[in-house]
Amino acid sequence: MKPIKHLLVIRLSAMGDVAMTVPVLKAFCNQYPEVRITILTKGFFTPLFSQLPNVSVHIAKVNGKHKGIFGLRKLYKELKANKIDAVADLHNVLRSKILKLFFKSAGYKFAQIDKGRAEKKALISAKKSTFKPLKTTHERYCEVFAVLGFDLNPNNTSVLEPMPMQESVLQLLGSKKRKYVGIAPFAAFEGKMYPPHLMEKVLSALDATNSYQIFLFGGGETELRQLSLWEKKFKNTINASQKLSFEEELQIISNLELMLAMDSGNGHLSAIYGVPTITLWGVTHPHSGFAPFGQPDSNSILADRTEFPLIPTSIYGNKMPKGYEKAMDTIHPQKILEKIAELTSN
Image (cartoon, rainbow, N blue to C red; front, side):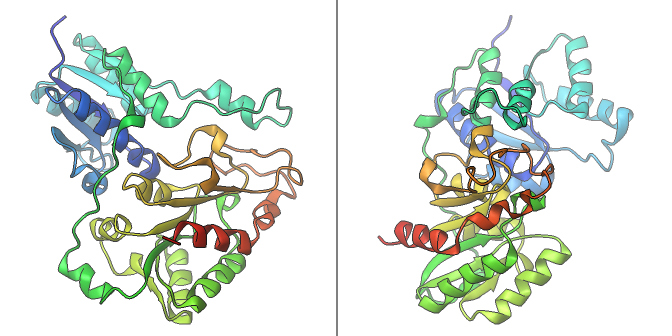
């Protein structure tokens, strides 16, 4: 078989999962600089790959010209025209499985991620036979490349450099007098989200020190309304998501002293830039393999499993037994504040 000189990598969504490809792809670029990579993903995520040499983005327009079986056929032809040699599917969903049929029928080598569904199902079972860390998502990504003959070690990979900030961002920031702290207080599901009334206590205490410039990150109409209320209430707080593009948000995130996030995408964004990242975990758990890249275990603050022994009850936070709505309440705001003080003390 001819050597692989141009590799297609598929990872369409979600933001955190796409961000987790970055350190793995950086390791690939460092170890195999002679191989070109095209990553198939949504156009929104393009800025994440700007620092990776030999990596280009092919935009999947899944709600446009690439929608449905005929759209995927068109997408396959576009990718084939780019002279792809092999495919690493880091997503393993219906769309990528259809692309697999096209590529395999044409004789392309195609490797697909094993998401470890059985192990994850056992981890969230009410009758847990074992409770131990599963493979990380980064490790699962690396396994796909290993099938294609590329052994990777992302643990030896440096993180991305802070991004230079555009004039529009600098104008929003003004002169730097305080430490930059990001807070991403939301998640896709309630089981992964710190209660707003407790997060407000964290914000209030941080704001009162006058030592931090706080940037709030989030999306969606309801979330943005809450962030706007906090921006008005606390003098050292900026609702970044309502004022900036995704690329501009990344410029701020990459220059933070610290990020406080849920088990969600923003924690993965800050981690790939080497920003100390505190994550809060409710009915999910780092053992599932979704902790941010390169962060020590001590940066994960967990709900009390003594009081809520079924945790994790879900991999994605969408399943929560009755009574577990209060799991996150066991994380006291003071514990978060002490961790922030510790990580920003230098």
